[in-house]
Structures are given as C-alpha cells and as structure tokens.
Length: 424
Image (cartoon, rainbow, N blue to C red; front, side):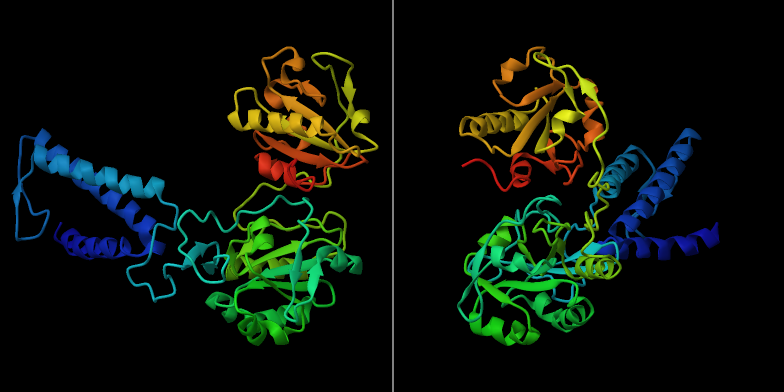
C-alpha cells in the first residue's frame, strides 16, 4: 500500500502536466478518467462498509471524511475528463509551452506525421485571424475541372490556364504568400521538388502580396510566379491556407485533395514520385483517411423503371457525359439543388450533358419535382451506392463510356463544380 502511495504522487503530477500539452491532452484525460473512477469506486466501497476515512484529496493542507460531497466532486471531474476523452479533436488550442510559431494568423496543426505549419491569408496579402476559416483540407472534388484564371506574372504579363494546358503536361500549383513564414521555410525543399519532378510536372507558383518581395523569395526558382491581388483563383479552389499544393492532371482536372501545410505537401510529393503522372485516372487522396472514390470504375449493368416513362438502363448513360445526382425528399440542401437543376434546365442546360437524379423519395410521381432530368426512385439507394453515392446531396460525373470519372461531390456548390460551375 505504501508503495502504491509513492507511485500515485508522480502519476498525478504526470497527468497534470499532460493536460497542459495539446499533443498529450487526450492521453492525460484518459489517465485522469481511469484514476477518478478507481478513487470513486474505493470511496463507494468504504461507504458501503460503513466507514468514512479522511480523504487527503488535495494534499496535507486539507482533508475531510469521505462522503456525498467527495463523490459529487469526483462525478463532476469524471464528466469533464470524459468530455475531453470523447470530444477531443487533437487541435484544441495552443500549447502552454508554444514556441511562438502559433500566432493569431498562423497555426501548428497535429497531423499523422508531426506538425503541419500553415498561415491563413487575406486578399490584401497580409495575415488574418483564422476564426471560421474552415479546415485546411477543404477543396474541390477530384475530377472537377480546374477553374480558369487570368493572373499577371512577375513581369506583369497575364497568364491564362488555357494557354498553359496546351503543353500536355500535368501541373502542381503551389499557393504561397509574400509574408507567409511557413512558405519561406519550404523554399529549399521546393528546389528539391523541382529537381525530382521538374521533367514530369509543370510547377506554377500562385502568390499574393508585394511583387518585389515575391520576386526576391520565389523569382529565382525558374517557374512561373503568378501574383493575385484578391486571391480569387486561390479561393475558388479553397486554398485559403498557405502553403498549399494542388495537383492537376494534363487534362486540366483536379487530381488531388488540397495538401495544406508542410507535412501534407511532403506526403503528396513523395506519392507523386512513385506514380506515372500521365496515366489515366491518376489522383492522390489527402491525409484525413477519405474513402477511396470509384474513379475509373465502370457503371454496372442495371435496369430500373421510372415512376413514369420508360425504363432506364446503363445504355442511357453511354455516348454522352452524365451527371448522376443523389437526393432525398427530406433534405433541405437537396431541395435547393433540385431548384438549381430546374433553373439550369430552364436556361437550356448543356446540350452535351445528361442528367439523372436518384431519390429515396416516398413520392411515387416524379413529376412533383418538375424536372426534365430522368428520375429514379431508388429505395435505400441500392443502385446509387454502386454508382459512387456518398450521402445526399451528392453527385458523380460519368463519361461517355459509362465510367465514373470524379469522386462524389458533396453539397450543391461542389456538385456544380463537376461541370465547371453553378448556373448563372
């Protein structure tokens, strides 16, 4: 028993210290939770036996008999510890012993392999607070066409994407900033990436801020450096954090999740070194454990009856691109998507694009949607799941050969990005 007492004090100190550090917070909370449960169980056992020994719960400065007050205090502490254990995300705030890299505009985010350094930037080129900035890994779905741009380079001449894509080479876009400290730290590695991948992929730096500072930092890398004033293009691909990197295939389609921060960027670069970057359906997932999409998968044979009209089969998807959208009659965002599809149809739509809508609807008559698009009532989404559905509203693009060519886009904005943007 005496030995246990000698071990208990260092253990409590270790738990206290671990609760002060972001990286060990959850471990400390688990240990505290276990210790509190053990203490509380021992108290209950003592009370059950009719004993009420003094509890030196806060050292020799204070002691009191075990009782309802002690149990209530422990119950509150157990609830707090459990909240940290089961509610912790691993990025709860700044370390007590932060070294200064985590300022009001920069952040150190824990990742699967160390720390990721990022900076949130404004359209004027300076850092901004990161409140409600969104997750750095947010981005457009793989397979969506890269939004077009026209951005001046360091020499003032405007560069357009349609001119760059004529080279028949994939692209690596590096989103940086003139005042971005983490970006500057990566410059030596950028030189290595250019040496290792320069023959296989075209590097494009997209920056913002003072032109002379950008020229001094990035001008001698030997790649195009484009300077945005308001970051319209960066924001269009959700590159709100710097440094971020995006891989785009030679067809001009997004072929990676946005890699934000040093760890994610290095991981993407290492994956790119091992792949044939000109291969069909080459793409790279992010670090957050996304399920592998159905890109490159041929749509299975099927035949379903519409609520009204003729039967739909796989043959209806062949010979033209088709957007397969998945909705629910009880989903507010789905109602918004249906309204936008209706507006798109009323404006003529795209003559080269087919549209097919899968619904779990209890509505037996698809005419309630007032859509020209073919509607399939798919109970429990049994067929939709085979076509790459990932929740509602979502959608995938199917090419003329009946092959899924994009990952599932979630939400109306990302769904429209699969065909170049929402209806105007």
